Image (cartoon, rainbow, N blue to C red; front, side, top):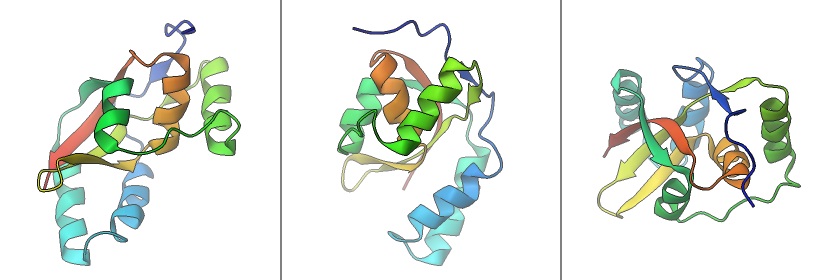
Length: 126
């Protein structure tokens, strides 16, 4: 059963530390020049929203359980009324899937509250 989503707050923009985190993850998949290009594009994108369940399905990732320490931290932030940072997403048009460049744990934590919640994101295509 979904919990109240009124208590989930979001920052208007990703926090500055989210971009280096995304860069670190993406550098495992792409070469440095491509990562630099993706990060520049993400910084320029506007915030859009997608349902948690749709991000989860499009990413083809496994959902982390609420016992995961990072998901647990997300739940603690939600319970304390702290804002969460929007996700950074990359649409891989060749593979027809979404890469969660930053925010996987936040997405999983929010999904456990309500899979239909709109999650603010920045998304760019490669």
